Amino acid sequence: MVVEAGQVHGFLGPNGSGKTTTLRTLLGLVRPNGGRMRLLGYELPAHLPEVAGRVGAIVESPQFFGNFSGRRTLNLLATAGGVPKSRVTEVLELVGLRDRAGERVKTYSLGMKQRLAVASALLKAPELLILDEPANGLDPAGIREMRDMMRGLAASGVTVVLSSHILNEVQLICDSVTIISRGRRVAAGPVSQVIAAQDQGEWRVRVADHVKAAAIVAESGLSVTVNDDHFVVRNLTEPAQVTRTLAAHELWVSELTPLTPDLESVFLELTGTTPESGHHRQVDEAVQV
Amino acid sequence: MRLVRAEWSRFFARRFTRIMVVVVLGILGLILIGVGASSHQPNPAVIAQAEAQAAEVRTQVTAMRAQCEEEQRNPGAVDPNQKQFGQLPPGVTCAQIFDPAQVRPEDFMPHVFSFADEAPDLLKAFGGVLTLFAFAVGASFIGAEWSSGGVMNQLLWRPRRLRLVTGKLGTLLVAIATTTIALMGVWIAALWGLATLRGRMGEVTSGVSQSMGLTGLRALALVLAAGAIGFAVASLGRNTATAMGLAVGYVIVLEIGTRIVLEVAEVIKPEKWFLSTYAMAWLNQRVIFTEWRHCRYDTTGNCQSYDWAIDMKQASIVFGSILLVSVFAAFLAFRQRDVT
Image 1 (tube, rainbow over the protein chains, first blue to last red):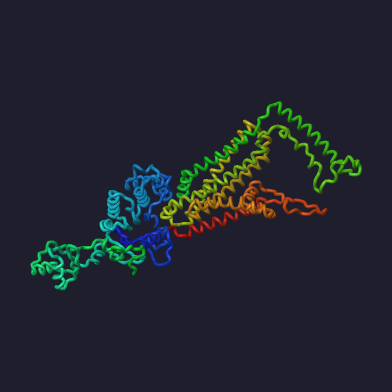
Image 2: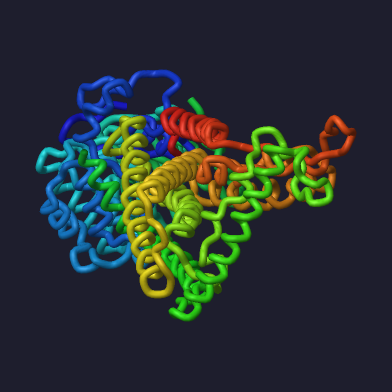
């Protein structure tokens, strides 16, 4: 897994695939039993203490001492970390908790705790921000604010590693992704390349008698799948081939649409987790490489 | 130092610490009220009557001492029918048995709280209460941090685990020591005030003051040990309930259950198996028990009970061992175990 400086990098995988364990290992919370890790140029875990001050992180669900207020929670972290108190006010403003900072954390909603967690990660003005499910519990406005904040941080030079299951958000925010399944990497690279690699040149075709039309197109040597009210042509390099073939049989095309995959479909395909009707998929049922 | 500042602030900001301080003050207040209620401020007539009774008894004691000494000096010269004391055991003198100086007017008055006589024991009671306080606060200090994710948050800032746990334990002990010393000052002042208002000071000699000072130091050491052990056990279990459950389990199973079993089974010297014995030995310097279940036969073949003791040296070995083992195990686990 390689994350370039200044990028927003998505770290994706099904439940139980090892995302959080990977992040915990990277942050020194879990002891690695093999392999190599480097963070901001430092070998880990040997040099983690030198680099920890430059890395902000939230790992899994946010947890805080419920009887302290949000501000006191951040103040204690700031005091221990040698961060000026003014920074606490800044990050509270940034995550939208300014007016609720004096209330006890146990009165916060999940989304507010999530905001507080992000604030704690931002407290030390990190060069690298690692966020595990940061949108968990956020309302739609909060998700958009989180997205804008990450874009803003990336624009200011902060590298962001984002683990999330909200794949349309990841597709919108991230420059690159790493997808893992059962502890192994199944895809990595710029988002557009990962998606393009799964593009099978599929086109949706609508026509009055779509069953007859599908048979004609199939006879011309193309791969076809018939659906309820349309058919899909695969590996199509020249769309005009479909219109020409059908027009020769006086069948007139009403729709010819390219089916470009999105990150979600690519993810499901690569991890082998596409839902199947009537089958209750178990957590470990995923692609293993 | 930054970590110490943050932990210090956290210690005193915690609601549990504040509640426990209030509970301790409540318990001490109840003890004070009880002692005050049982103390009767004597009026001049009562004092005069007590002094007269004491003087009369002193005269009797002096006479008995003289007779005792005469019997020891010339055993043959005394009419055997008049003999009262016979031969004393080796090392025992008449002066030890009959000491008029030990007859005091207070012995003939209703109970009057005497600072000089009772404050040392009440200081030991204070040590006992604060020991429980320190165990609970120490356990909660790290236990709540583990269960609320605070330790993980701090490890993301400070991955040097041993430094982190050392800073936490060190700050905890300094905070507990500060609280204990402050409360001890309040307690001694309250006893002083009680003596002034509803009792008497008694003879507060330099010996009494020194003894109280040493008792206070021993109490402080026990309190700190309890705080560290509570911290260590809660850290090993990663929550407060582990330490509190262990403490309650220990009291129910060992201090109560096993004590009953050992007594029913007539096991010799059963007290040596309980931590409360060693705590008392530490605070009192020494506790003496009389073993009557398994007597020793003297030269005449009579079955005699005998005394045995546990002193503060044995207590220090027991508590020191528990402290070292628990803290070492907690540090080792803190350094090695994954944080999940």
